[in-house]
Image (tube, rainbow, N blue to C red):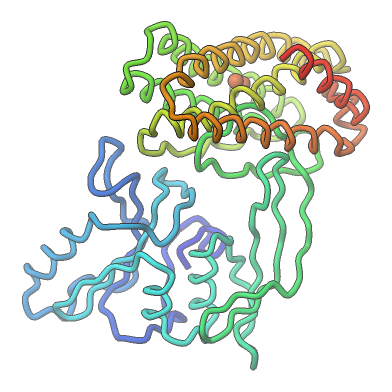
Length: 393
Ligand SMILES: [Fe+2]
Ligand SMILES: [Fe+2]
């Protein structure tokens, strides 16, 4: 299917098992950053099954219609993919006809009865699951296995057994809860979860990917600030933060290698430039809550990690994160007077929600290996830290 879990990174589905309601010459999965060609590169063909326009009576007209179908309304699913773009849709050709699939209903109409593993995997992929390409066609429907990230702070991915009925109804038969991962810094919109494990090196590799993702988030923010005519000082601070986060990714990546794990690649994707109201909501949660918390935890690690290399890295990183927390506050002070009362309330709610999530994470017990080697706070220490941060804030 259209997914590297199934296709070992190739991203190109074989299609043999995909049973569509109508015969098509080709089916393409495409993604783009926003409608039509953009400065971020426009639509990208992620994978193609079959040969476009193979049985068209007028191949040129079919090819022209195929390329004209780049722009359209709405997307089948918005999710991260390694090619960088996030908004996905399908385009098919059948004889002289060209059509797009931009809704779940349209996908179901194209699939007809969901009666093969590939049909079910494509549908659950569009629903936001990661198909594991393991399953069976049973009497009640197609039973498939899949993963899904259910929380990004703390990061947690669960594994599911799902049943997909012939009409496309998806039910969870069983859920296996995955371990909780880190919750540090600013997440880029659309960022994927790094592969996390209970092992220190892998955990650090996950944090390195988050740091690299934070660089993408700040690059996006810098462009948005320029676009919206923000003061030069804010633009410069965002620019500095990009370099800071890139440096953090390298520093934590070095630590990950020290513990025997290769840093994970940064796959964070840019999104279309956002409105001031959306930036304020994001900054309230990611900046005014999570970066403040990240800075506090970093300072704690700088003092408490047993490993001197961790102490040294966290001393430098925490100082930068404090500057990012300051940038977030200054940004919010510039944004809020420019927003409607409703948008201001939404930003305040986003910030409260983010702090509640941080508090939930703080209470989760960390394994001793993390508290000792990395100096991460125990639940009691984290709650005391949180208390201090909220009184200071
Ligand atoms: Fe950072
Ligand atoms: Fe940061």
